[in-house]
Length: 140
Image 1 (spheres, one colour):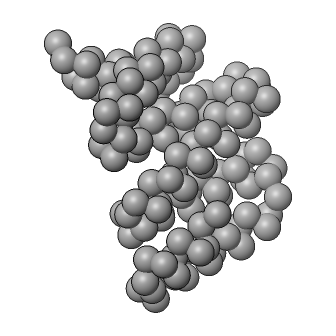
Image 2 (cartoon, rainbow, N blue to C red):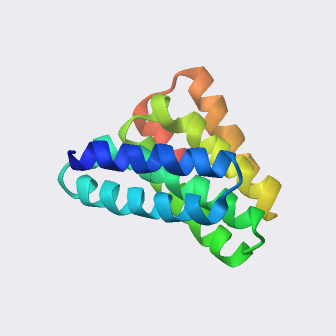
């Protein structure tokens, strides 16, 4: 089995365990998947950053569910970083994912509501179809 197939398989297993609330097993498989995707991203970052961001987001949700808020916040920040990188590569494709992550941080982690202003600006600029340079100014 190729590394990419193995990473995807671990990710799917983790999702399945998380859905059934078997969080300890989900964490194990997400971490295994993350390690594989990180090694793949060294050679081809464009293809593997999105799964990495999703894993960080999913792990953050799990840690919130088991009330490990410090770990939850760290993982959420990692997810935000990854989405911001992705937005700089293709704004239209990834801006909505970044906005969703920002909103989750405000809703579930009590992050400052000023970040909602950033989310609104991103959405407004997506709708107006501004140039890539204009859009990158909004994303920190």
